[in-house]
Length: 156
Image (tube, rainbow, N blue to C red):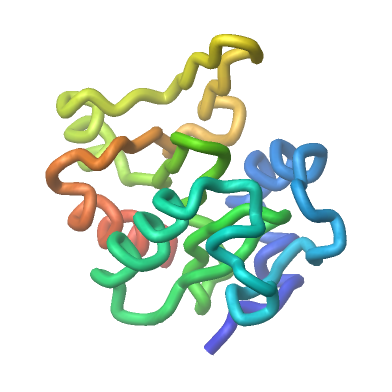
């Protein structure tokens, strides 16, 4: 089962990420919603380091009960098919984030995860501008459980 473009684009839970991604889409020839098989060399061609794509789609995505791999405004994402809610995304050379319920978000913060990513030659990326549930991850122990919690949270 795949989410429809409308269920993802019009989903109020995705509004903050949509605003952030609309102006930054690396490949405007890709629609607002696509899937890995729609894009030639998806792991290499989305402007995201392939290790991050593999981390999000293959490693973290492997704990999910259904395939949630998608491309949201040109960036690798995890989208819950039945609700159309984005609950994970990756971008650039070292950024991936999950939308977590409060208990797991607090656990992630205790492990060292943060909501703000600083860049040497660009303004900081503050996930609070995207939404209150988002946090940057960095291969922390327990991320597979956080990803499953993010999936469950996206179903509410």
